[in-house]
Length: 70
Image (tube, rainbow, N blue to C red):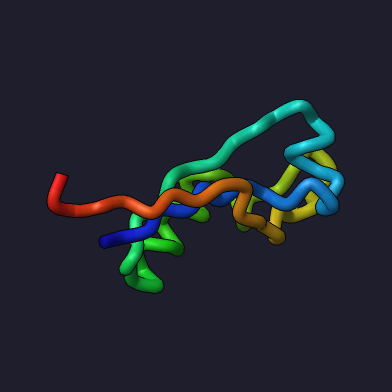
């Protein structure tokens, strides 16, 4: 069995979510810190908005448990 999480920039961050952008990506576990960092880069964590504020917080919105045999 494996687990996948859907990671998004955190709404309380008052940035991506409040700009109307719902971005995120499914992440299959187990994973590595390097792969998770790549996911964060793809969804904009660490980048800055028009005012120079970084998108730095994220949260998990959904998860799935999968049977790898199917």
